[in-house]
Image 1: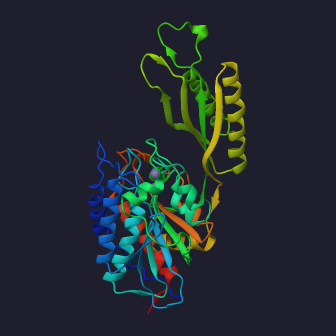
Image 2: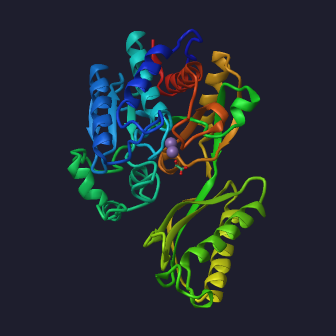
Length: 416
Ligand code: GLV
Ligand code: MN
Ligand code: MN
């Protein structure tokens, strides 16, 4: 099969304009986005994406988890499609590019194929996976997880948000629950373009990260039970302070992660304190410890030590403690052929590149279990992400989408 000519490029200006137009939906408070999954803003973002896809001549499929599939036909009716995509949902204080670049970069691939009048043997499908972020509904990558057979659909529908609203009901409410059976689609390959969300590419002056692996993740939700009591009049020895128990556990989380340096990380980003009143000693806290490492045995060790240390702290303080695993996946090794397609594309286009391990979770991590999968990354300023100030340059976005374009062209096979 002939390699695509190095002159073939996507339209970087158009991609940038689309990123900026999508960012107008669900604006944040500091220049980024708050377009959390299954909110009205999520529905609006989906509608805009669908409009753009239809204008580019695609047909839209929608499955029962709300995953969207915009398809451009190939010439061979028997050839499985090459999938690209990521997610349009954001963190509550999210950036404009996390996930969005992968979806709109996929759309840009199709728009560029149309401009250049290129036909491919395999169809190409651009996907928007529902609830990648896992903010409103744990775990992250929920709908790609159902697609890959990791979770059942019923279990996913029963996830509740902080207000007690169920995933299934909210998906129906925003009008994006489709009829299609989840996971019935078969893929020739899947490619996800994403910002790095870390500092390596920018620091080394590289245009492109060829993602060979993804680090694994473990989310343990901990509930500590003490006793609500007056902060002023309760003597120190009589206090059963769930907040203090959590504080002591969080010190251990940090220590445990540091003990596996340099590659392990740990923190709690989700903390609910009850009743959350200035003059009540908290009688209950619920928080989630997020541990990650590229090495499964390290993740297992961190999980085990967390439970031992937390139990000991709570026993000593006469606090109740319960643990629930609310998310996790093992470290991922991406498909060698797909990884080569990304590396070849960067090489052919003259972009500087290096192999890289993804620090974040991605839909590609689940899809890798059901289809040959790989990811391409572009740098982001100061490695900052999950922050409204997340930033990339137009050139970085275009380089990432060019590499995605060529990897897709090579895999979907240009028809001469
Ligand atoms: C997803 O954004 C994750 O890495 O938590
Ligand atoms: Mn993402
Ligand atoms: Mn994210």
